[in-house]
Length: 322
Ligand code: AVJ
Image (cartoon, rainbow, N blue to C red; front, side):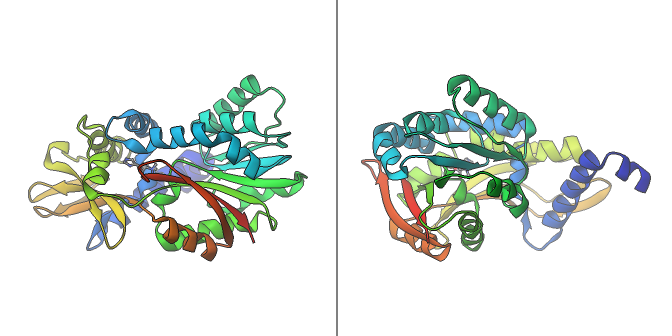
């Protein structure tokens, strides 16, 4: 066992970490699974489908906001900026932004997937051939993934964190993440970050329980993934997708509800489900402008300005490291 582990550390360690997290998450009194496991290859493809779904207003609202305010945003960032993107996903927004900037210094994308990073780098080099790219493979919540930044001289650094990704973090974790961003910036450097805003719960719930049932497939893929990778026997027909807005916590919670009492076996370990018992799979926090400004301040940033769409559904914020 030890020999096998050390001979292929990457895969084996990833696998055992997944098993450990799943057993820990399902072993407690309230069942929960880390949302990062929703985004395997199948899950990431389903998430892209969500972004294009009619009921999921977030992506198209953000794209519209960027398109309409690009000149303004670029002016706020100023010239000679090195753009840092924690979690390089879809490159369209960063390309739009870099193309608009005055004399950009370069692009520093980070991602846990080397394939995604390679694709991002290739796209930038093709569409914006003058731009220097420094790619870093790794989890951007780990300080080491930011280390190489210190070797790149630049007039100004700007962290770009779109997609309402900050919403996936609990408020306390969000502050820690902002602190990590700030620790890698100098006074006056920038943060361009997007949040979904608090709104009518019907609209919010429809976005996470879309009529095309893409979010349901996305959520249930987590059980498929556990079956595939961890030798488990989840019966998907015994779980229902549930998404609801929790006004006190200001977040949409995604759950999988067990429809009746039953047992599941995971790597030979029995896990019991009561009727109506849920697995909490993801939280998506929503903010008011004031609430997010307070969070920015706690994390070491001074809010400078923000852009909202006409229905005040979504916001892009620009802040400066203190
Ligand atoms: C990737 C965290 C921005 O919160 O809207 C969408 C994830 N989950 N539908 C979001 C998600 C289900 C998404 N983020």
